[in-house]
Amino acid sequence: MSDQLERFIFSKHDIRGQLVTLTDAYREVLEHNQLPLPVQRLLGEFLAAACLLSTTLKFEGILMLQARGEGDVPLLVAECTHHSDVRGLARVEEGADIKEGATLRELVGNRGALVITVDPQEGERYQGIVPLEKDTLAECLEDYFTQSEQLQTRFWIESSEDTVGGIMLQVLPGNNAASPAENDDAWETGVHLASTVTAEELHSLPHEELLVRLFHQLEPASLGTANIRFKCSCSAERSARALIAMGPEDVYQLLEEQGGEITADCQFCNKTYHFDRDKVEELFNAPPHTVH
Image 1 (spheres, rainbow, N blue to C red):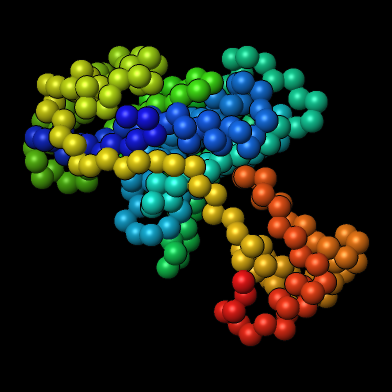
Image 2 (image 1 turned 180 degrees about the vertical axis):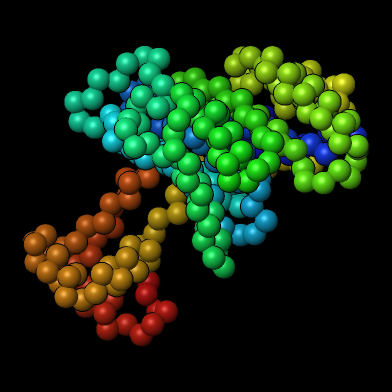
């Protein structure tokens, strides 16, 4: 049951949902981020939300969820790919006094924004941004869908120091399975039932059991599950391409400044890639599409 994402639908209504639980992948992300406990839990919420949102991907690519601001935690990032690979990070200002119970809006600070980026392997990148005007990630995501997607969408996310779980409910466009009035009634019922879920239920119950316990009167039907894992997408090739994009003049200057070897650190997994003069010369002498 751990590290699993389940999609479901209410059989007789135009409402879909997602249910996610993370333990191992969440722990692996935290192993690469030395964070105060309140920020750990918040990063867990972002990971769960990215997984829930990734089910909207209809193509190969990455969904990235970010919060940016000017506070003690100026950046939170979680990514989920179409393969259900996740990674995430949070930045905490040096010397920050992170208080237990601090809200997302308080931690991210002034000029806070929630950013959702969909980055397909082929095609145009899409980005939606809303100001962080609510205290919880769930409420901010609901604002995003109200303002940007105009779809009725609700989230329930609970995070502890070792497990995170979440539910997303969303009204489907059109009235194919039921009348508008019937869908409205089912939506209100579904939201009410989901609002009764406890953190313990989200963290410990098998998904099949939880769906029946919460929504049995709405006849939930599974649309499939996905196993989630931590996997960083960094590579020597990606680091090399970033250097190539800088141009030879800047890269050779950086090489001199760093004593003859450029180091590129992945902020998500802390892996370091090294480029000495021979490797840099190889980068700029190699034909296109042959960087290794």
